[in-house]
Each structure stands twice: as structure tokens, then as C-alpha cells.
Amino acid sequence: MSAQESGESLEEAVQNLQYMQQVYQNQYATISREINAVMDYINELNAAKASMEKFDKIKDSKILSPIGSSVFINAKAASEPNVLVGIGGGYLIEKEIANAIEYLSSRIEMHTKSMQELLKARNKAEEAMFEISTRLDKILKRA
Image (cartoon, rainbow, N blue to C red; front, side, top):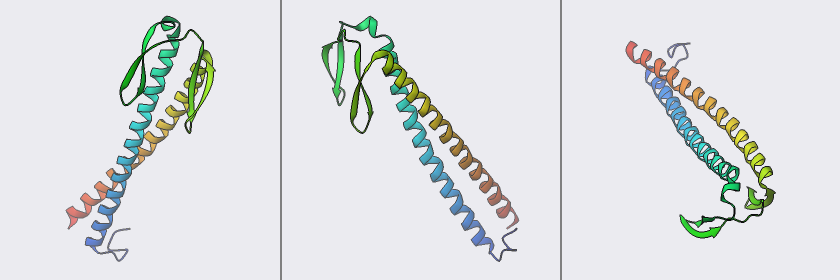
């Protein structure tokens, strides 16, 4: 149905499409930021997992341990096969390294699936922006 058939003026049709385009652009930008945050978290989980997989090589060695705000202290990796794992909400649980690696792997898988859903949503927003842009071009060429 064209703008004239719906009783909408050409100017109103253009304004409505521009508004819709802006909404989808904002949605696209928001989803992109979420994707970047999830990717950063997945990278962090992978780094922690890789460190634990190499634990046998570093136990009883001197290491640098982060204490916050990019500040590190010299420490010694304990030979104890347990680590504290954050489970959310500021809570930590103690796990054997093998179980911690398994837990991190499941978190990586879960967040990877979440990122795939975000990518689908971003693609839909991109398709909508393209469709609106095409419609705007057609309207403006007829004007």
C-alpha cells in the first residue's frame, strides 16, 4: 500500500520511514555493543581456561597475580589442585581444576550461543535498515 493510498502525505511517509530507520540503527548499535561485550567475556573465559590447562607447568612457580586496576603482585602458584571460580553475583566456589575447566567450557558454550542469537538479531536489524533505505530511495525518486 502506497503512502497516498493510506492517506499519508509524501512528507509524512518520508518522516515515518526516517524515524523507523533511526530506530533500527539504534537497535543495531546496541546489539553490536552487546556482541562486543559477550566476545570480550568469552575471550576472558578462554584465557582463564587456557591458564588452568597449563597449571601443571606453573604450579610452585612465581607468578604475577592481579589485585585490581592493572596492579599485580608477585605470588607463588600453589600446588593445590583447587581454584576459586566466580559463579556470578560476587560469589565464588572452590573447584578442582578439571571441574573448573569443564565449568568454564560450559560457560563459553552458553555465551557463544548467546552471541549467535545476538548476531541473528543484528542481521535482522540490518536487513530492516536496508529495506527502509530502499523504500525511502523509491519514494524520494518519485517526488
